[in-house]
Image (tube, rainbow, N blue to C red; front, side):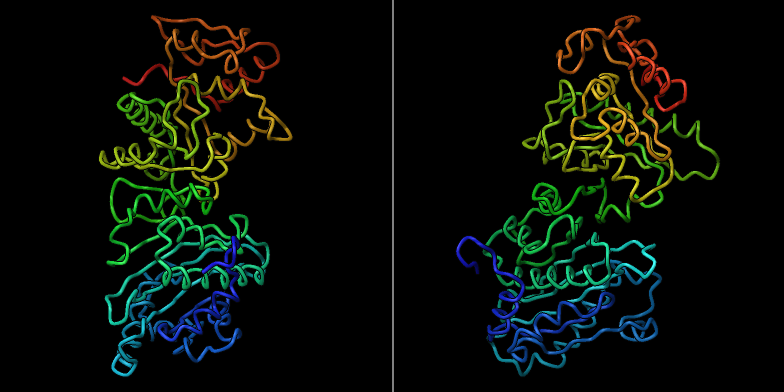
Length: 441
């Protein structure tokens, strides 16, 4: 399983599986070569594990095997591949393999980097397996984003993750977290991102599917995951792609209803200013696996699971990040859409953002502002109470900030930052990057 404190590498895992007489199965890979099967073929003793490998690169051949499809890199295509190969494996082998063999079918459909580097490098990978001989089938399906800059490096990463997946399903005693973390052995989030997982079958009866998705972020396998208010779930690329988005950082415990009202008001505001033909806005609550850095925030990692569950129960969508900086959320969302993106935030959150040094950025505050407002992004700033402004910690609100209250409330156009920051703030409002909102009623 492990050599000392170090995880086994792909060579050791593939060889251990090949030498296990109880594991036998097929490989079907489309795109990025046959990198997973190649590991098992080159480490030795492959005849003990590999029943067949197939690679249907031709669309016509692929359609003849798995049926016609409008999308060849999709969960639907992966399901079709796994279903067909499992049917063939059982028909060809089940009667003659003995009572001690655990069968599996591994499949992937990948769009690796093209010659010009203009495509989205991503793919789907999955396995159907028996956790005991003659047992029922179980499925694991993954969505991956490939981050290496070359096609060859992406192929190598796919091979390693595929070996990790096959090894992991036959060692489920490590538990859910151990299983997930092992998927990126010899790989990193900088090379491969796993931003979606689907678990099916009795082998996973004790595993919480929502927790598995959240764990992808908590354990550093993904930057963010989406959990929608409905079913089935899907990776960010399918939910966010080309969508107009309204994003509300969810941070203030006990104000769920007001935040939902804020999000609804932001949806109406965006619709009123959008041109015809703009897609229906997608509302999302933004949460983080880290404790929030917004003032007065109390929703942290401990409450995250319950918060997400409550949001989904109310048919709300949650976008869960592994960080809490607003400008990084902009960068993530802009991976998938060039349509309008709007943040709906309490004024105190905007003031907090503008008051920070942003020491992690070379350009400090100016770089943070440029990243936050990149590519058709605006911030709808909703009023906060005068008492909330007065009680902001001095680290979040230097004393030189001034404001005027109206009936106990402070709006974005009634705030005056100190010194040169005041000129930047005036520019953001005058140019429409910051939109002062009067309320949510």
